[in-house]
Image (cartoon, rainbow, N blue to C red):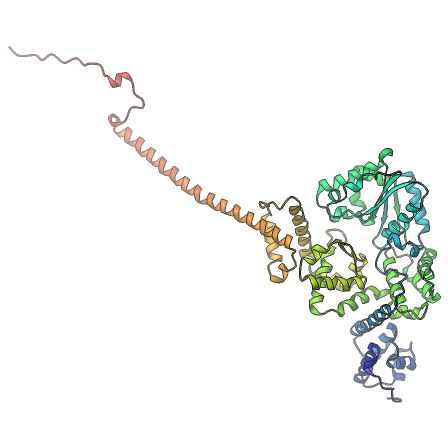
Amino acid sequence: MGRQEKPVDPAAGPVAVFALALRQLRKEAGSPTYGTMARHATAYSAATFSRAAAGEQLPTLPVLHAYVAACGGDPVEWEHRWARVSDELASRAAESSDEPAPYLGLARFEPGDSDLYFGRDRLVHDLLALTDRHRVVAVFGSSGSGKSSLLRAGLVPRLRERSVPTAAVRLLTPGGRPLSRHREALRPADAPGDTWLIVDQFEELFTLCQDTGERNGFLAGLLAAREPGSRLHVVLGIRADFYPHCLTHTEFAQTIRRASLPVSPLTRDELRKAIIGPATARSLVVERALTATLIDEVHGRSAGLPFLSHALLETWRRRRGRTLTLEGYERAGAMRGVIAQSAEAAYARMDPAQAETTRQVMLRLITPGAEAPDTRRPTSRREIESTGDVRETRTVLDILARARLITLDGDTVDLAHEALITAWPRLHAWIEEDREKLRLHRWLTDAAEAWESVGRDPGVRISPVRLTQLDAHFTTPADRGRLTTLEADFIAAGRATHRRGNRVRWTARAVVPLLAMMTVIAARLAWGQNRATRQHPLAAPAPYTTAAAVCPPPTRSRRRTRGS
């Protein structure tokens, strides 16, 4: 058993409670000595295991794994418990400090974050040079490559700093009805200089816009910028896996073929700047060992930037004084599980009702792919809040926003980053469980919004196949509770039209046999009359009347012969 451990007061906080749980695990394993545990783990000393259960500080995740393995515990369960404590400690530290974070986590850089945007000087320079040669430019990059941040925190500030007069810089995303929503933005501003249209998340033109007329009209408005006298410049941010979609429009394909810029992964030197630069801007220091570890883990990964930024944010929350340390990074869960742990920690603090609301909110923000990856789906607060208790939904939105899982921008709710779709196992499982229902729901939402845009025509038609699918997927009270008022009204209107059509068809089915019967009766009567005419010709009425028939000629009477 070894020497007696110092008592731990559970009232001292979450670290003390966690330490007591570790001691209980060791007791249930037969109370092996720390020396025995160290011989089992080999990588850690008895003193390291003793400190892990002392209750003075939270052990690192690798130490926890070794401790739990030596005691025969469940590593997944203990990792979740550790993540909850780690996140609670980080939240307390963040709440007690007014110092702004130098890293944005999963959130993208905005124009106002340009003082923290490092590592992309070369790419910004190349993009500006390309816009000098072409009026319509496309920036292609994989999800997580940093193309949105490049446009917003890299390009926009440089455009505003140029000596050349700029009439306006407009930053927009297409949405579901791009032409209707941005018709005015496609026109040059009434001021000296050119107007710049920065269209981020251009793939929404294919994932959210279902109206071919809207899509083609919006494209035509963008392509009009190619004319020298248009006074417009267009820069598009497009996810690389949607490049084939862009080729379906011949004129657009020819344009981007001549003026495209790929967003390549950062070099090792650029990664070093992206890691150290924001910390230096906030008078912080990044431990060399941490910098080297992060570079090794992220270099060459095309979608590694959101993971890097989030890991740095969580490491900053666990900093030691003014220094970001490798130990703090490991306590945050390292690159392997930092996003999932942060998401799980936020989810674990919710009560059952909030957890279910979180599931519905997160799924509303997803467009499931059909022969394409799943994508984010920005939507309105109005849509989100109309599916349940408004107060509870707003509470959940606030929790998710503070955990950096979603962003709230005015009336728009969006995933903080598409990396969440694959990095958070729980969310990925929700999508897989509801994939078919999600696809149907996305169709329903788009169709209902289109129906509302034309004045809610009461005669709207929904195909019998679709109605059957809707009945199959949205029949229980829980399922119906996921629908917005607009979606429910759309289904009700479609069902009413279907019932009216059925009544017409049933009436037709009843009338047709009656008419057929009357036709048969009439035919039989006609046949009978015709037969009677053939049998009694003198009784048959003349088909038409003549003067001779009315006034027959006088007949000669035979002279009677009398006998003499």
